[in-house]
View 1 (cartoon, helix red, strand yellow):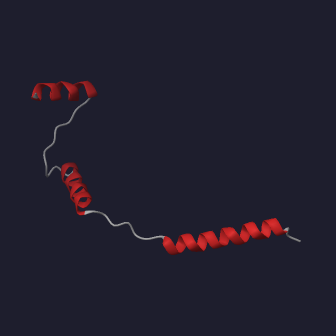
View 2: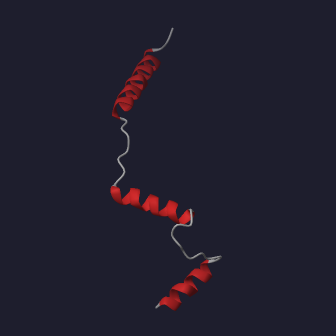
Length: 67
């Protein structure tokens, strides 16, 4: 025979799962995020040229040269 405590816990868990299932929604992506994702894909596919660095030091040196 189940104890009253375990029965209550199981019932609460079942209710929580049903409540959570009803509240799950598809995320809505902002236009800005969609554009950024597209730009990232374009960079990866070579449609947009970008600089590449082999180390952080190389990146910092390039940034210092731009100033």
